[in-house]
Length: 143
Image (cartoon, rainbow, N blue to C red; front, top):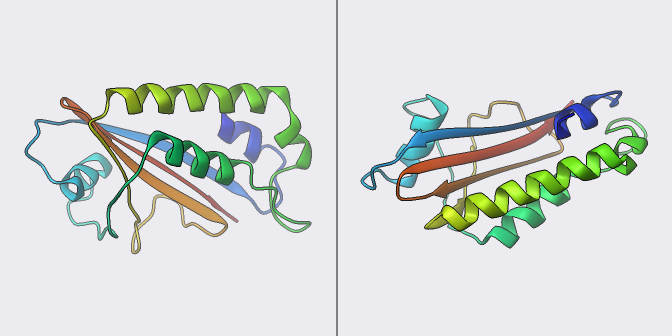
């Protein structure tokens, strides 16, 4: 079971989107171009890129995915306590660390005018750039 399955199952007015996009990287493209190419959108308006660490990524991703919501919207409280959710979070953290180790740069960016899932409660977007590929990690929650 994936993290999104855990959080979406039985959620109240709450849907989680979590996706990675991979593209080959030759070292010549800008971060903006890499994200546009990864998303398959040639002219996506992107916010400022800010260099971050793997620890920053993990902290933000963990904080977002463990969002408890309120009585009207959010994941079922038991979902955040389930062992399958904790196992999925541990696997995601491990994947982020492995991707970060292979990266020469990690950047946070925003999608102010376009997003794969309209963000309502939280969202994040990161670009991991290695010598041979770029990986965009994008997550959000909506109602």
